[in-house]
Image (tube, rainbow, N blue to C red; front, side, top):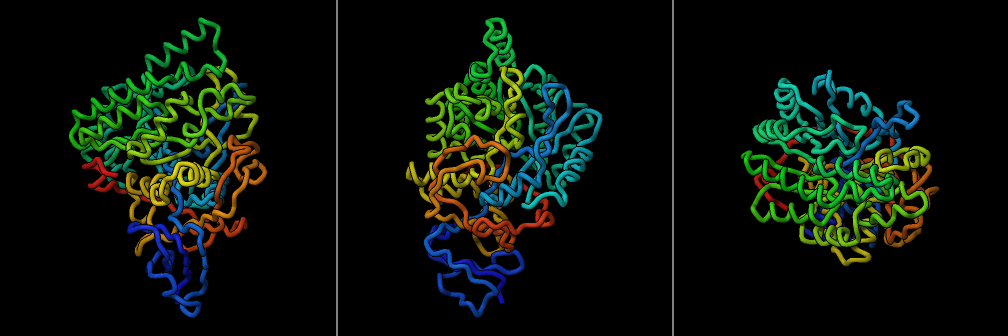
Length: 475
């Protein structure tokens, strides 16, 4: 007897959207058959989703949990842990998140990974994985350690081309070391994920605005501007062209210029992929001028309406492939603690409403197909990050990670109905659907607002990037 069957008229499969029965046994999808194939006598539970949208669970490729976030008074602090963020993710239909194992000087790559596992093991309600993150001047021994990590199932390595803020000196990796990282990652068939901003431009603009007495955070877009994204993206891509086999994933693309650099690289058949954030798609630099405008900020900054329009166009033409959050879950007090261009807290509490907001904006307001929407919030991330078809697909053999979106649940978001923090940058935003059911590897973990998950449910996902993605550009 089957464990679970979900029947629906709008089931999103790799072959298209249609009326299907999705049969689950032992945490895995064992069959996708014509609707009505399986009766109540064949399964322990039959869920009839009717006209609701049955989709693979969302995948957020960019979150930060238990992340170092010092307070302005000098006391140490951390963002909220996986237990908080993963619970919110499941409420919102996201079943997989990817965080960062941050290497710093004085430890090995393996120690960085082990420390990250200690924060997550038994403390996460959903499945998860890690990018390895390196920073600053890289010692010679680190390249061998990276090779070992890549072979062990940690195939994505993050680099910064800027220190981001004057107080974060030492985060940027110089281009000589980036070149060496590229060679290791290419040899081991992995991928580099990039925070790309030109450090000279960024730091010049900090100094310029300080001199001009314009250090208020509302001027952030002048510091983390479109030019610095353009220059950095093109320099990184230029370096990559000189390393056979390297694949790139640009995180949090925020500007038209960045999207255009990626578009041109893909036209040259380079394996380059990219992500934007729902903040950039829904807010602009003008929102910094609103009361408590810091709540809309992440790094790089919000940009202009023209940049925002270009991001939507880049998703339509498959220049941008995923929508992440750059999740930083903290209190409103912490989010508002900085008021200057050099101390404003980045990141966003957004993992819970991401799927519903993007459904509303893509399908409801812009006429995207349901399949295209699912690609952008789930399937493409699985393919790029080496999780497909285990994740991101409703297909036989895939994990039974399923979200059921109910289009009859049109509502206005309020912080009280969400589960991440004491504030929400999405307060007052209208959504045209909300998950009524979330399933993680065959277990119903949220049903009609009732949470049924357990901290033992979340599993770590070892990954391997497919040759299709590496030889790209695919998608």
